[in-house]
Length: 104
Image 1 (cartoon, helix red, strand yellow):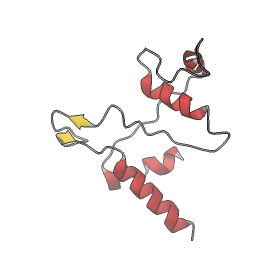
Image 2 (cartoon, rainbow, N blue to C red):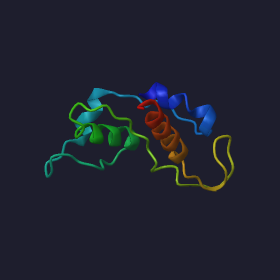
Image 3 (cartoon, rainbow, N blue to C red):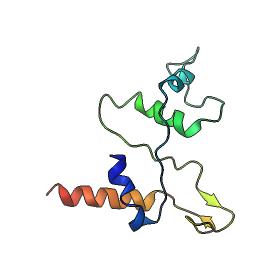
Image 4 (cartoon, helix red, strand yellow):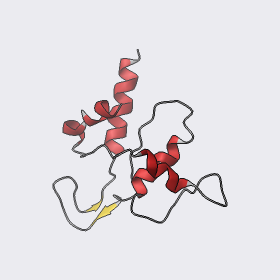
């Protein structure tokens, strides 16, 4: 699934990368008070968010696109203009459009 989304980069201009998937990170979601801790305090937020979602998918393939860190930028960069970015929206749009067109 990641490869299909990655192939949309030239069309969307949204740069994406596959995050590491180290099984030992799953241990960071353990909590003494809840089934899972959805916001552990450390520097692996996007990765842990993927593990958190993975806990509920019941074998269904999924792709986690982390929108959390990209809502606004203070300057123009190679991948985004200054201001509100809407990062990921074009990728999701074209992915869904392509999936609908190929399911006919």
